[in-house]
Image (cartoon, rainbow, N blue to C red):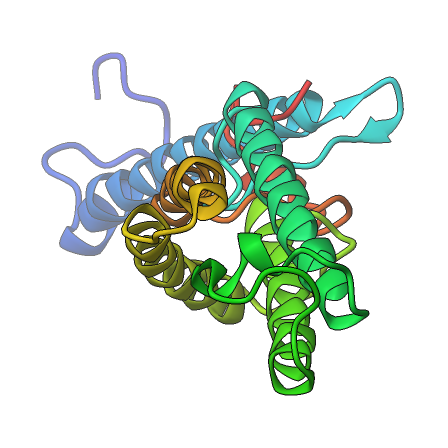
Length: 229
């Protein structure tokens, strides 16, 4: 009776009131703590997404990221394009020479082993016309291998076509060096060797990226530092 308000019960609380204050109250606190952790995690996720979007959007413009095939730096792709351009010019020179032979130019001493000086007969002129088509096609193949949009060939065609040109140029180099014609031995021999080196270097590397071939990335999946300036 001392110090107890009227109507209060002395002694331990009933079991259902004890469980209400301790068991249920503990579960309520645990639930609130978990909710606070979830809020912190959501805030961290939102902050990371905002940071990723900040790296992608600069000045209101969405920048593009490189795919796995285009992650090489620009200073690596530029020499490959120069190699492809140099090889294409070389093939155009060879093709133009074959066209001249097919049209009847008196350059037989510099072709077909130099067996026939002057104008080639009809059969060899037809063969020169066919060879010109092959060399012009070779120019398109190396341009596609270098990533030029002027030659929209599939990557598989440009890759295996460049390796076929490597084999063809290796054979042509051996035949020109072993030829009895001074034009082929000292002219086309070194020229075909240079073309072989160019095509071999181009074939061993990857395919250059074509302008406009990149796809816009998902801003939420962009990693910092992966954007192209």
